[in-house]
Amino acid sequence: MQVRNGLSAHLSSIVSASSPAPSGVLPGGAGVTPEQLYDLVQNLPLIAAWAAGAALVLLVVAVTLRLSAPRVYWFTLGWLLLAARMRLTWRRLALNADISAIDRPVAGLFDDPRAARSRAAVPLIPVLWQIRPRAFGVTASIGMHSGQTPEAFIKAAEAMAHAWGVHAVRITPGRRGSVDLTVLRNDPLTGTGAHEDRDALAEAGRAPVAADLLAEIGRREDGQTWVIDLSTFPHWLITGATQSGKSTLINAAVAQWATRPIALVGIDCKGGMELAPHASRLSALACDRTEAADVLTGLLDEAQDRMRLCREHRVRNIWQLPDAVRPVPIVVIVDELAELYLIADRSEKEVTQRATANLLRLGQLGAALGIHLIVAGQRVGSDLGSGVTALRAQLAGRICLRVNDDETALMTFGDLHPDAVDAVQAISPHDQGVAITTADVGGWIRARSTYQDPADLDAAVAETAPLTPRLPRLDH
Ligand SMILES: Nc1ncnc2c1ncn2[C@@H]1O[C@H](COP(=O)(O)OP(=O)(O)OP(=O)(O)O)[C@@H](O)[C@H]1O
Image (tube, rainbow, N blue to C red):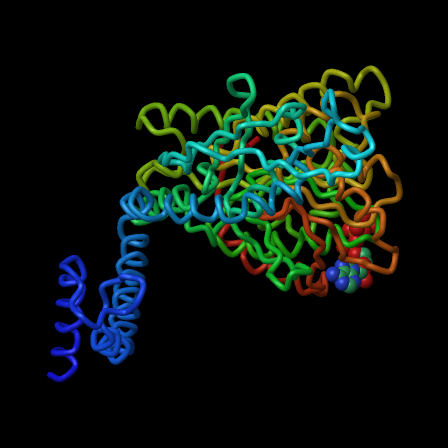
């Protein structure tokens, strides 16, 4: 009660501050008597408690809003916080990222040139203005100083994204003397929105359980489990010299997919030796190029059947089909890619062309139709023909174990992550099972497969033979 009286006295003091100052006011004409000041000091703990309480309530409201209504949160508070961060960091960012201009002293007509030279050069910070909220983030403009060009700002875009904790900053030249900023707070393609879509589909029972297509194969150097997740990267290229640990890694993944309702198809043009131990769990196994061409033709027919089914149900991929009609996913393992592409004599030309064209077509169509490619090779180079480069473009997931030639390292990572090529070349022959692999964040990472006895893996796969789905299109 005493506290309340104190606060009301303080409030009335504020009201009375606008009225003529009574006798005994503090010097300076602030209109605050020593009694009022005493009251104010007395009530400081209460005012602090109120402020802390209000801040806490605001925080709870903000967090709740952010979780339950992200859009409302963004347009009320989120963008203001981002704008404040942009303004607070702008000066330091401009200096560190080399986007400030220098005001060099110039001698005037009547100045002494030596005196002008002795004056210190002053950095000129470009003007950040017109920060406006948008659904994807904010837009803003930067007013450049004379002598500045948009290129310097384009180079600094990544530094801006880091300083402001956003997904990306895009810079476009604006009106003369300015550049326009588009600040994307999340990756609109893979951010929370995409996960929400997937969650919604999963709830409706129309999305694959992510774990169905995900195989755990080892550990990454950031401590996370190394996985091949076909729902993130539908097709994979795996390269590695002999004895680098390729088969161990692929077999570990196969042993997990084999326990699930997934069809496995093998293409092993070296006589089927590598995949032979899994034969009882494979829906089809091709052991030479002619068989490979036939199996791939069958898979393409299967892809066309699935396309027709999707069309009939007016959906864009098999995961949106009703459970009752949804076909099983198919994982096609191609061991030793070069065997499929290299032609020994002209008589093999037609069959090779058929096989490689079908493989490429599957890479282009397969992801939405639940047909996934795991393509492995000791050596993958441009000498295999332009078809290999076209196929590589479809294989977004990459794993490169130790290789014996630079070109294979370049073929595996040179197009997507040139900086990963050096990391591949640093893998020593003693590092069996160590690889550079595609990562969802950061592009690539070092990882090591978990070594499992091949005999154990073969036995585990053999036990799953009764689960083998039949693919009528591959029955010959
Ligand atoms: N993750 C691992 N940790 C430790 N050693 C491993 C690992 N993976 C493989 N190795 C070792 O490397 C040897 C070769 O592995 P693997 O057969 O998988 O290689 P590969 O690349 O398939 O060789 P090839 O092409 O000749 O068949 C294995 O016998 C094993 O001793």
